[in-house]
Image 1 (cartoon, rainbow, N blue to C red):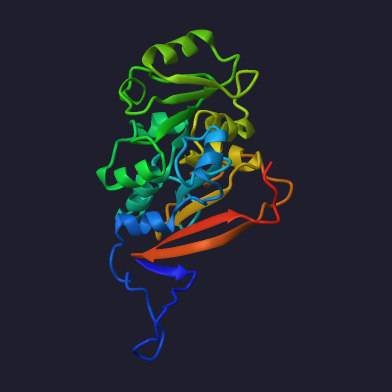
Image 2: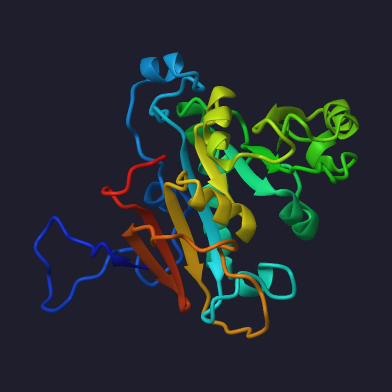
Length: 288
């Protein structure tokens, strides 16, 4: 894997003329190297995190930080045949796994749960020490956003998670479905007064449950709603060197914004023709 941006800088003088490359260029990065490259921002101390309702770990963010992770084809498709896997690669899946391992909670839409066959996040020994040092649980929680609660609560995602699955819905969602979710072991969180979920409330509500390092894997409609609500802090986008044509959605699916929202490139990696970009909301754009 090569880091294209920001450019690698040696602390020592080069031993040969010409451009210098990172020692990691030309080989797959270790999980630790990827985790360091994608670390969440650190803005507070352990004591402050405890007062804010965080998990109490060192480096816990003082407010929730929501990052999105998506893959897109060269022609802009967010999936092929309804699934993202045909656009992915080994390197993309390594980064996907690391982003999950760094998160307190993974936020996902109900349609993506149904389409992708979501299962509970598992404990990974490679990240056990890092998560313990950060005050995190053994694995991230999965938080499913659904208004109708048209979900199969007998699935392992709800009945066998290492960390209880959260269901984000509206207070007026079908009462029977809410009870079914609770009976399966899920934690029901009301994120709206009606049946619909207010995406602007999701990060704060999850922070109240001790989850401030947030990752959303979509789908496109959910990611579009988070972006429109002004709460998407960061976007990790894999550009796949494949084209699909067809009518697949883009990575954000929904009404257009009145004014395009600015994001800044913070890193760009490459492996086997796949580009792994990381963008953060522009400093000139206030978070809602």
